[in-house]
Image (cartoon, rainbow, N blue to C red; front, side, top):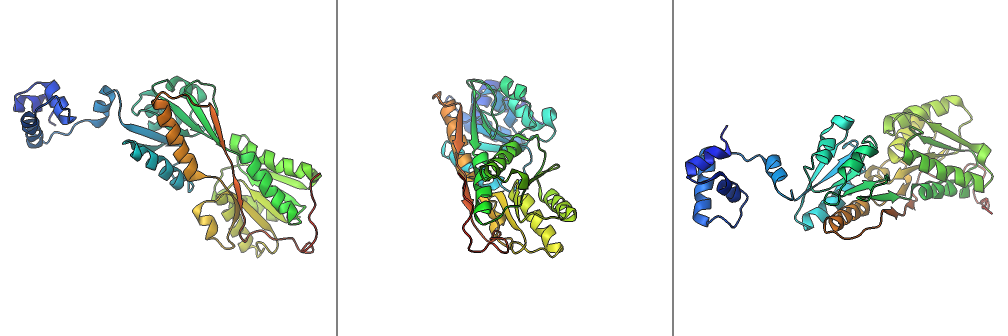
Length: 341
């Protein structure tokens, strides 16, 4: 494989001149640049982009680091980030943090292979993020906070969103309610449970609320946990799921058991992924501003790179999207809903 030394020798110039020419620097005359590019073509020389980037003060690239790139709500988030990045002449690299400290994502952080990062991943330790974040290397955290002068946190108001969704079920006349989530120790899950519990408490329904929390936050686990809920008997009339994926899995389980949604049980999700409006029944859900959050994260990252002062944390509101998966339980149609004090 040809090296930069081989190109310099064939073109009859120094290695530094080759480097300038390949990076389109105006220090090199047009005729010399053409001679160097022709030598590189003849030798089939390919420049090492990462190594070259590491030598420059800026890579003109930012990274988005998420736990799992397969998540259905990432598309709008990525779109928001990418549009802002492109408007600034930057490229966007998206990578997964699966593998934790050994992942490529962590290498991007610790080896500064990009100019800054937007991180939506709980499996990267706070200590790693604190070590990586510097004045010239800002990190924007999504749905997470750490104490560091060079990180900025953007959160969605998850607690308010679940409180709003639970209130909607109660206003429709539902009194036996359940929340279905995953790992109870996951911070986002704790916020959503808090909103669910607050609404129950305000209406004196604490004893009527059920919590079912373990496993993954995906469609398969929503399906499995709903089947367990059905098997236990005394099915609640209204169920709030941690996210739309789990809710869609739950609807499938109800369908297989001949339980009608919303005729027998009402269902609400969270996120408002694209599929939510196409399942049947169309899913009532809590919308979080995915595109807007991505665009804001990128905007704040570039402000930090420009040396502008930022607030340490930002919070975006949620909104209830009412579709077809919720209705009043049998016997409650037309009744005045219970109101909080």
